[in-house]
Every structure is written in structure tokens, then in C-alpha cells.
Amino acid sequence: MSISFAIVGATGNVGTEMLTILSESDLDCGEVYAVASRRSIGRELSFGDKTLKCHDLETFDFSKVDICLMSAGGSVSKEWSPKIAAQGAIVIDNSSAWRMDPDVPLVVPEVNADAVADYKKKGIIANPNCSTIQMVVALKPLHERAKIKRVVISTYQSVSGGGKKNMDELWLQTKGIYSNDELKPHNFTKQIAFNVIPHIDVFMDDGDTKEEWKMKVETKKILDPKIKVTATCVRVPTFVGHAEALNIEFEEELSAEEAREILRTSPGIMVVDKREDGGYVTPIECVGEFATFVSRIRDDSTHHKAINMWVVSDNLRKGAALNAVQIAECLVNRGLVEKKAA
Image (cartoon, rainbow, N blue to C red; front, side, top):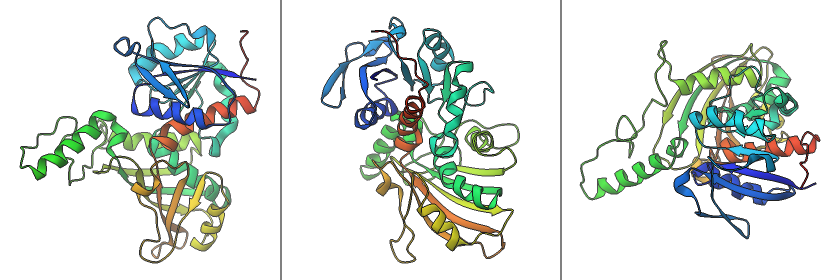
């Protein structure tokens, strides 16, 4: 059964990645429509060996679409996702707009694929935050074995997590350093080139940023509400690829050796963990890859029921576009998409 798709926000970083991954997937794609704001009408985008022309979000007829992959930002999603769902398309939204809505499932297919069936409440499925996705993929199999009590997270997040404008700022500032230009931050609070910034999203009343809050509440919703989570999220001067250092405390004893073997056989994970120079994965090496990479798995010498590990993933792929396409695959494989008459 062929499935028709609309990609809203198709001209953005994640939107173009969605088109690429969808074209590479095993899904039987019928019509695929690129949709964006009015200023992008007629812009050409690649879909496999085809060329798509952008349609205007304001006037596009979503009644002819089975699944809509939405990557146009929170405010656009808040307005348009219910309208699109009302026309009969299942919306898979990449923004933060619906993640904590109790009637909207928050899904990472390797972790809680069965939750996709709950889309019928509002016609919307939420894609988690990029940093949360890669972490829960790595945590899930360990939680099943030894029950996680607490996770302490430090993230090293690439600028692409904030969109193309942030990538442009890093590029321009980096060039500017070598030509002695004055470096003024525009999209960041401080210089990002050759620097790190412990601040992603807005500050909240308790001192956490919203990015740190997202990691807490999303992990609880996806994996287990009993898990305690604390995070420090840091923007670093890499273009693509998020990295995380995790300290994981369990209810039961779990050695690093056993954790390594569990992770080796778990879906969506690739373990690269050699205790030698270069025996680990860094963000630049994960770009363009589908897997979540886990390295530096070791016992915590200060706690007999805790381990440390390093988790890396392409935030534009598994952290956004790939996860959305995998959710679509879950819907199709479970027979949850009601094909519309041609």
C-alpha cells in the first residue's frame, strides 16, 4: 500500500533531511509533497531522483495526504498540526509544541513503539528533543535489565540543533577569527567559535534551562516516570552531531562489561569501545549515520551500582528526521494508516 506524505518545513535543515531519509526508506511512498511558507513557493527540492516544487502551507490541501512530517517550529505546529489532523492526515511533529501533551504520544521507536497507537486521540505524534532521543535509545536496554534510578547528563550539542542560522554564525565567526574581524554574537549569547556555551534555550525559575528541563520530563514520559534526571546542556562549536556524557545509577548491580554486551545486541545502537587512542566515536564521525554510538563504557569507581558512558548521534538524523520516518514506519507496519481513496 503506497502512502502519501507531506513534509512541512521542507526547506529547513531537518525538512530536507526528512526528504532524504524518506527517499531511502523501505516505505512505499506514493505522492510526496514539499510544503513550506509562502516565500518558498516553487522552490525545488530533491526527493531521490525526483524534483519536488514547494507548496504554500496556507493553501495546501492536506486531505490528500496520509502522513504529515512537520518540522516548521513550535508556533507553526501549534496552529497547523490540529488543522492538518482534522483533514485526516496523521501528524508527526518535530517541535516541542506537543511533547508534554498527555493526549499526544512521545515516541522513540526503539524504546516505546507501541505508543504510536495513541495518536488517535489528537491525530498527532510528537518527536522528542534530539538530545533526549539518543539518550533513551541507549538507556532503554539497560533499564530493562537493572532498573535505572538516576541519570546525570552533560551534553555537548552542535550548533545545528538551533537551525541553519546558528550554523552560519559559527562559520562566519570562525572565518572572522582568522581575518581579525570583530566577532559579535547574534543568535548566541556569547561567541560560539572556539568556545562553549552552557546555555541552550531559555532559563527557567529553578535555574535550569528549558533544554535541560526537556531532557528530564521527556525521559520520564518515554521511559519511566520514576527515573531521576539532571542535566547540564552545553552548545559546542561543532556543526552536526550531539554528544553526551552519562552517569547512570541502577537499582541492581550492573557491570560495565555486561552493559557493553547488552548494548551490542540492542536495536539502533553501535558500540565502539576500545580502551586505546581513538577507540571511541566523536560527533564528526557520526554525521550521516543512522545509529546511536556508545563508547567509553566503564564502571563508576565511586558507586558500585553505577556506570559511565559516552553517547553520540547525528542530531539531524536520529535526533530528528530519522526518528520521524521511523515513527511513520511503525504506523504503517502496525496497519494504523487508513489509506485514502485516490
